[in-house]
Amino acid sequence: MSRFQPRSRPMQMLRSSVGQSTLMLLTSGAASAAAWGLGHLSIPLAAGAAAVGAGLAYLVGRGRRATALDSADLRHKTVVVTGANTGIGLETCKALISVGAHVIMVCRTAQRGVLAKETVVAAARLGGSAELVVMDLADLASVQAAVETISDLGVSISILINNAGIMMCPWGTTVQGHETQWGVNHLGHMWFTLGLLDNISQAGGRIVNVASSAHGFDSTPLPITSAADYDRVRAYGRSKIANILFTRLLNAKLVSANSAARAYSLHPGAVNSELLRHNTVLAAVTAPLRAIVFQNTWQGAQTSLYCALDDDAEPGEYHAECRPAPTTAAALDMDAAAALWAYSLTAAESSRFPMPDPDAIEL
Ligand SMILES: NC(=O)c1ccc[n+]([C@@H]2O[C@H](COP(=O)([O-])OP(=O)(O)OC[C@H]3O[C@@H](n4cnc5c(N)ncnc54)[C@H](OP(=O)(O)O)[C@@H]3O)[C@@H](O)[C@H]2O)c1
Image (cartoon, rainbow, N blue to C red; front, side, top):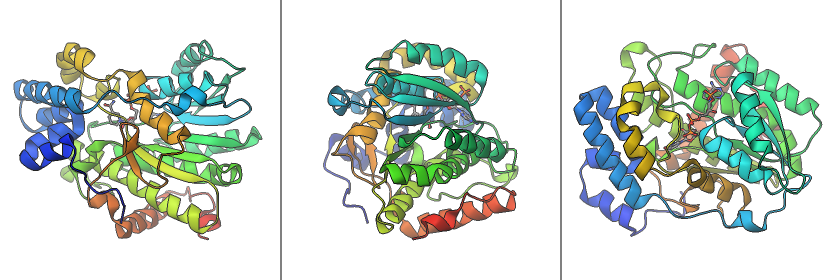
């Protein structure tokens, strides 16, 4: 059980006094709430949900920054960031290169990655540098290839930030046949992490998994397995519970293996990024509002940076606003974490892409 139980903070007080629908708006931010509205109600109601959610997100979700960045010196350190070409990931890369890191920018396509790398390199200080690795998390063959490419570089990885994600897309599956949000947000990242784990463990590094407060949308980390049962909001929530539970169990395994490496998860806030790309009407309708009241991507990167750099970040725990944060019972359930781990190993194995040497961390 986490020692971070819900506290008597304004957000928790609000949580206890509002109904379930408002809780959804509050905990997810406007993007999530609006997407839910679009899926369940109508466009005007979705826009209304967006407005309410945005207001609440504005009240509860901005302001803290990762002060550890001020004194960080990552010269001669290598960091790996997924989803590095835009949004929160791009801003995270810019911050890390500005304190001297060698940043391996892992991007879905070379085309977008090359442009993003130019932006990141322009922010370099203290000899920081960047290179691009292409990886499509929706294809375990691509994940495997990226692990091999990074391993062949012969660098020691101090920080891995699993940031890439998709939200509330229509029903679809990855190349290996797993529901897309679960496959990209969780399974691909789990495979990637285990593939690099020996390296990170030897470096005593940190693994940072970008989850979401939208993990409250459901109560299981396992995927929806048929189009008939598909609900894009619940599917996103499941993938984000999976991020949090994978972090908890991975961290526990690292501790029991006497590894110095640690794992952390977080909610970045309600951030004005491209995350609504699969909800185009909603994205267009809410664009002006989001530009005003959502966090920008620099603000959205702060809790990732906190988890990557700050001594006060709590290994295994879920964070928001640059501090440990309360979460749901489902995201604290270690039996569910074990079930997710086993399910994921089987899912990868049955797809003919067994997880890289999982026995090595069954210590
Ligand atoms: N924005 C928010 O309000 C918010 C709130 C809570 C949590 N989060 C989480 O924060 C993380 C970053 O989101 P963001 O807001 O920065 O979103 P974003 O602007 O849409 O960026 C998402 C990144 O993930 C990459 N990506 C998507 N599918 C991929 C795949 N199959 N393989 C490899 N990379 C893939 C994208 O690459 P392409 O551009 O090439 O597709 C992009 O670089 C996500 O995990 C998201 O769930 C965001």
